[in-house]
Each structure stands twice: as C-alpha cells, then as structure tokens.
Image (cartoon, rainbow, N blue to C red):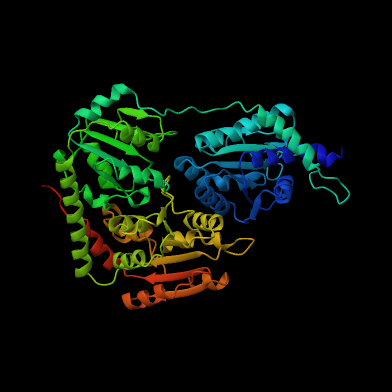
Length: 555
C-alpha cells in the first residue's frame, strides 16, 4: 500500500459509511489538508458534492439541504479557523434538530500549539451544540466509533463532529492507485452490521394522563416551528379542539398569534396546554404564558425539549402523529371545547380586521408590500422568511394558502445565513419555486451565498425589503431613546442589491410603489434566479407597526 493510501484509506471508508447511512449530499470547502475528503466525496457515485468557497455560507447551504431532504448532509472543510466558520450553522442545526455530519480536516495533534500554520484546538470546537465531537483516525475501532457517531446524528436529528487529523502525504500521485470501491464496501458493511445505537421512543400515551384530558374545560394545542407533515395536519383537523401556531409551524391554524396574545386576560389561559414543534416567534405569546400559567402543560415530541414559558409539567416522548392517532383511534372523551373555540375564533377575526384597517389607513410600506408578496406566491411553492422584521411581519399577516411550505432559521434567529439556507434548500428541491423574503441587512450580510462554485439554482427568487437600515431597532424602545447614538443600532446605509445582482449575473428588478411591485411580481421568472428589491420608508414602517401592535384584546 502506498504511503498516501496508508494515510487516507480510513477516509475513503468513512465516506462509504456515510453513503450506507443515507448521506447523498456533501457540501465541501476547498482546502489542502482536506484533500482526501474532497477527493473521496467527489469520486463517490452516490453523493452529489457541492463546492462552496465561503465556509460560513457553506454551513448554511448544508443546513438548507438537510432541512429539505430530512437526510444527514456531510459538511467538509480544511484545518484551522475554517471549521469555526461552520459554528453558526451548526448551532442553528442543533436547535432545529437537523442532522449535519461536520467533518473537519486537522493537523496531527503533535503540532497543536507549536506555531504551525492552520493548527488550532479543533476537537470540541462546537461545544454543547453537537451531540458528539471525536477524533477520527485509522483503525477498525475508529471506524466503528464513526459508525456510532453517524447513527447518533440520525437517531437524534442533531449535528455531530468528526475531527480528522491527516498526515502528509495526502494528495495521490497520478500513478497511485486509489482504494478499491469493492473492498471499501465490504469493510463498511461489516461495521454497519455492528451498529450499536438505537433510540427508543414511546408510541402509546400512559393511561395515567388521560384523566387530565377528560377533565380539562379548556384545551389548547400550540405548535412551534415544524416541517410540513400532511398526516399530522389531517389529524389536527379532526380533534375538535383549538389549534394555533406561528406562520413557521406549517399547520392548518389561525395565525397572527403575535397580537393574538396581546392581553392580560387570565381567563383566556387553557387548563391544558399541549405543545408540539420547536421555537415560537411571538414575544407576546411567550410573555402571556409566563404570566398566566396553565394548570398542565404537556410537550409532545422526541429529542431536545425546551420550556420557553417555564410551565412544562409533562414531556411525552412520542411523535405528534402517534399521539393524535391514539387520541382519535381510542376516541378520548373530552369536555366540550365549543365556548373556548368561539373565543379564539373571535380573537382571530378581531386581529385580522384590525390589521386590515391599519393597512387601509397607511400608505405603501413593508407590511403592505408583504401582503402583496404573500398573495402572489405560486401554488405548492416554498417560502423562506429571513430573521428580524421579515419573519415578524409575515407572522402578523399570515398565509391564506395552506399549500405553501414555510422555512426560517428560528433555531437561533440569526441573520447570518438566511440566503445560504434558502440556496441549499433550492438546490435540494429543484422542482419547487423557492421565494426568500429578506431584509436589506440580512441580505447584505449573506451575499456570499451567491458565490457558489456552480450555477445558482434556477428556482430561487430573492425579494429584498430595503428600508436602508436595521428597521427592527426603530421599533424597540431602548435604541430609539439613545439620541445621536441611535445610529449605532439602526445601521443606516445607501446600498442596494443591484450591484450584487450584476456581479452574479442575476436578473434584478426594483419597486418603490404598490403599482411597481404588482407589475414586478407578475413578471418574476420561474426558471431563472432573480432579485426583486422593494424600497420602503423606515418611518412609515414604524408607524404601521405601532398601529398594528396597539390592539388591546382584553375582553
């Protein structure tokens, strides 16, 4: 065996293990120390390998692919600080329960802290935001450990980190024979047969909890962020109790929960709160339940469980689909929820009417533009909502079309990878039109997402809401009270997306009025990437935001 293969055979084996565990996409960042990983992923016929130069963008592109496919995605970089640039995406994946296999090439451990280039402490660099961080070296035991780590990522739907020290030489010479694929396959099949991790979840609700359901006069199902689940949505329509959630919950529900809970009326609080999904957008929503505690709060789900209201009384480790199937199959008896449902319906209608009145009383602004954009979304398409004001405004307005899937990086709620995640999602789902609505700062921050080492996905449409600064800081009391220091928060600027579109050869349109926006929306391409920039006035946005949030729903 050549010296190169002696150093890299285990890496080829690792790639085959990934394939045998359902990895079909790899996002790789160019580098030298990671050459064996680039070569082994690039040569494998069962993996689509995507090269991205910027590591931070690459991390979020991998996240978007994993979100869309619900399969683990390999994310690869060279040694040194390259891997640290994956950290925001890895953290987002952790809080969204998305399986990423982060593979960082490393220098041999004896060179750490010896002033050798691109050599830092890499193992454990992601802290508690991965479910495992181990060094992967040659040997059968190491291969079994890698198998266990990959299985852990899949069983817990969370990121894991394999740090891979590689000694020179690692570039194969032209005459060097690469490992034989048949030999690699047989070795990995033996390891795969010894898979040692198996996560058990419940499929039946303990009988002791049925009494709570039977005796509760007010039951409320509240969904946090979740992927589209048609079977779950069908079940939720049949249980005959109130079901609510944010726009990112992807369930059939009354939305507008951000102003829905703009009340201190304790009588609105349920006896039993059943939560599914993950994080919620609305601060008012959180504040209400922190101040008005339900008697019982169950969370239905597997994996990490948060308690944002500090009210949790029971964690039921089963899939939401199984929980509601059992509910319907066993015909659990519940007290009539008609009166409670009526109150919730009235609040929803009141909030909807209030928003319509506010929009009618104000001119063209970001809210008005968002309403137009949401109405113009193609059937059976995907909507990506960037963080900051974009997702909040869309949550106020809500979606009437239930065929549209909604995605957003609400695990950590950062603006740092919103474009990149949408790009990854579009790469993995080329048959659906993907529309990203994003603020100007979030777009400018993540322009490198367009810097792919391949063509941009043709089904991606980016709509930039440009109010020439960080509009959210105009709407928070703290920054607006700081006088001349306010500019440190609101980041005023005069930049547009036009030159970015020109640089990456993307179609560019702009709109300053409702008429221009309507015309631009009608002419947006469906087979080529495009950027539509909508200009609004920050002060006008501030006025309508305050008017909409001024609704008092005390009864």
